Image (cartoon, rainbow, N blue to C red; front, top):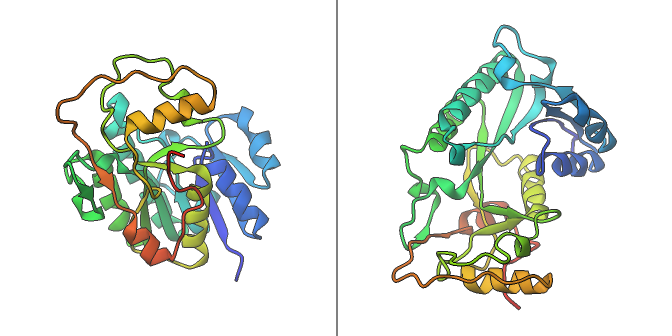
Length: 263
């Protein structure tokens, strides 16, 4: 396997361990942060560190960060804070820089929040076209650069134990709704597989096997840590979705490291 140059735009909870794993595998990896204080931690992971603020970058000449085999865009979408339009603007600017530079391929880390609650299994084509994140995905897919969109389910892993998410809370809704989650280890490995096997021009749901109810899953997770389990309200007809990972498993020939279950 030929080592690749990979630039990770957003070396946060997913980006930094991803960079470390890629560097260990022999790839040349650069990682970006918006804060000088984060440089040492990025460099300690074996990455070349760049301080980049997308909002301050211009498309007049590509930054050296955008000279790479693969650009991984791993930025917070901010949709819960009503900042979807800001995210859309950032993606437009990033794609302009990527096109002016020498980016051969792109991976956009997206989210399964693009699916409405349809009370059934949802597939990649079920995304809400009016969603600002789907619009951002479309910009990436139409950029002229071969790109794969990876829609992550709810994230958990080191520092994000699901037992802490709802512990001690009362009157929690959605107790009978299924969970859609993915562990950090799987996030990292899936991106590695895409890069090392040149899987481009795909849209893939990254969600673990297993969809126990929120009541069962979060109660078990809290008890596992010795915490007070949440108390769920009774929902007459819960709205839900079950995110299918069948396309990802088929395209990547991938088996999840952390299937979701309640033991």
